[in-house]
Length: 212
Image (tube, rainbow, N blue to C red; front, side, top):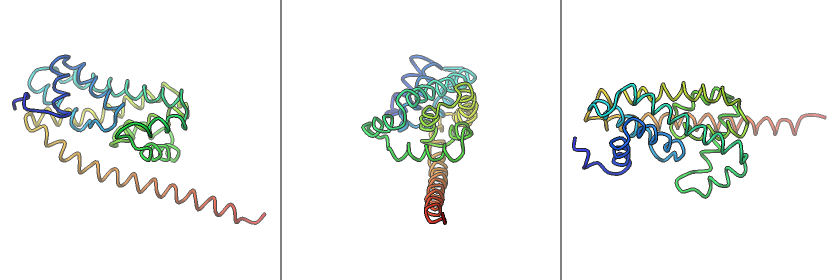
């Protein structure tokens, strides 16, 4: 594949990796965490493809992309911890391509499932990044947050980097299948959040009508 013909996010990521090597892949993933519309489903397979060409080591690609995930997550954790819930949501509402509703869904999921959402959230599109915000707002212990983020990110990154490595020039196939999987996962998460909210509303109404 002639990488000079690739544009968009893929072309931008290729430029980082060509100029910086494996650290460029890590930087791309760190930015993906800070700006969720940047798709890791494109960047990670592309890092694997780049490794298959010998432009970077496969282990280096895995280590640097995981480090980038952790750094990006810690940055969002810090935002949530320093600004608090209301100011963070207010700022997010002014950012292009960032939906306040996505942050609210991440908050509800975190409230329902607790700290384990940090681990599993690293493997769910959009929530991968945004789950760090409620973790910061709630001041989840930083060591536990970092460990769960690193482990969840390593699993997610390994799957996509290895897929790109094995597919070589057909790395873009990963994005197609990941898109289908993302819709299924997001649908399931959305249903879980709606159910959680409905149960909470029902509990409050029941409490109001309880005999005193």
